[in-house]
Length: 242
Image 1 (tube, rainbow, N blue to C red):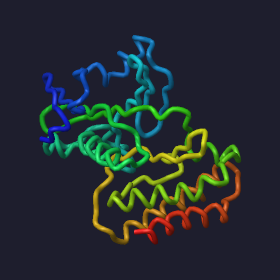
Image 2: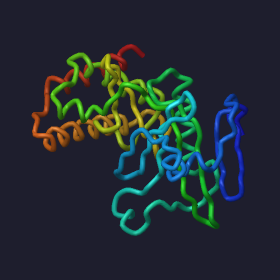
Image 3: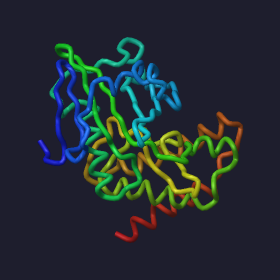
Image 4: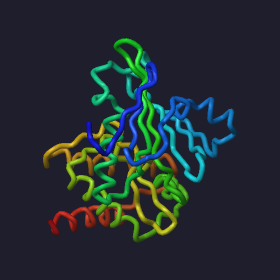
């Protein structure tokens, strides 16, 4: 177990947080009903996973519940097979985010991870810091308000994440955020993997390209070929500087 992290066990609840955090995580941190009862929910979204943005003291957190996607989600909503705490989705994402934050990459700060085990299955949640004054890139595209200079910066950001060996399995315009200054951030590292350089890097860029096409189609806007060239230029520039 890393000295930078501490594990707290409370019955069937197992929680992971940073060793330097003075607060001990509690199971009710991961219960949406408790946040709603306290009137601490600022924003609530739906989709593949339930996401709440909540106020905790002077901090704002993002609470995300892990849910399955794809065809398997029709039969199994949010249960996973228990293979040990360190192999759970929540613990793996928390630890990866810690590494990327230490490398100064623009990703959320992981606050705490949580798993609830019942026999050979578990459910999981993660709390990360809220990135203030940010919106999804997909929103900017739909509004026709994506800053002209953001695209090269997005390409450089993706290149930096790939440079650290991270294969993000859901590299889309919904998981790239922009702040008021047009600076990009990458979120939702569920099931991301550390890999040596390989074909997955180009596949990740192709996935992002498909996402931009899809968002343009869904929002009735046109795919911006010039913007995509800027993304690739930013990605290539970082590769050339290695």
